[in-house]
Structures are given as C-alpha cells and as structure tokens.
Length: 169
Image 1 (tube, rainbow, N blue to C red):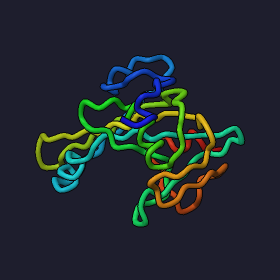
Image 2: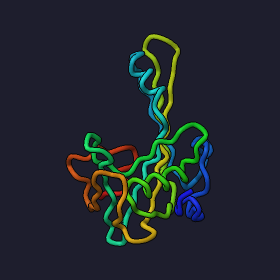
Image 3: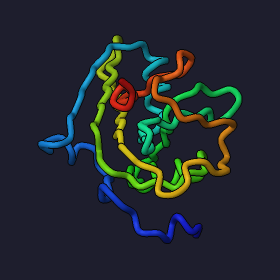
Image 4: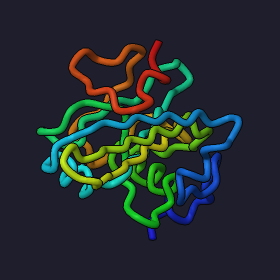
C-alpha cells in the first residue's frame, strides 16, 4: 500500500456503475451510438472503460501528459476495469503516472458509447466518467509518465478524450 492509497479519498465517492449517475441532476450524461464492422466491435469489447481527469491548478492551467513515447498527449485518462471504482482508479493513476497528488473535486460528466454490429445483433459499450481535480500539493513531481505539462490551451498535437473541452476555453 502506498501513501496515496492510505490517504482518504476526497471529492466524489466511489463510482462502480456509471449508470448510477444517469439521473443525477448535476452530472451531464451523454450518449452516442454507432454502427461498426465486426473487427471494430471486437476491439471495443476488449477495451476497458476510462476515467479522464481534468487537473486544473490555481493559474487555470490544466495537466496534459504523454505516458509513453508512443502515446498521444492528452489529459490524464485511467483505464478502469470491471468492478473497479472509477474515482479511486482515476486519482491513483494520476498520482502514479503524473507524480501529482490530486483531490477529485467533481464528476463533470459521463459519456456512454455504444457500438452496434452492422452484420449481427452484437453490441458493446464503453463508459468515460470525467472528473475535475486540483493538485493537493506541489503540482510538479516525479511520476512514471514520459512528459507532463500545464497548459491554458490544449496543445495542437494533443488528443481530446471525452470531456477534454470542459477544461480548456
């Protein structure tokens, strides 16, 4: 157990089922459905859900990072496996990879993507539960990511995962 695991979680409580947020008055719920080929559906079925985190500091700069040399720049986005808590996974992932202790402050929205097979009745879904967060301590520390940066505008070469636009003007 690391120090961040023993620290009490702040902000939103545990979220194991994104559908539980569907009827929440203060959490926007977005849905999109697309018809895809069987190969794309197979890939989607194998993917975990995600927990993107917009970490914004006192200067209104947002954390953008590149986890490996081959991955795209984007706001932190943790993979969330079945039966995992979206909030705890998101916080722990940012702290480990960016090296920045964070306090989750809100759930900014849920994006549900459903893919339907063009050739059968198969479907697959994927959820993105987007969190807002602020640095709990110094915003720069050593993490496992290749590089991190703090920006007021999303860099042109960055990928916008669902919810990214909430943290940039």
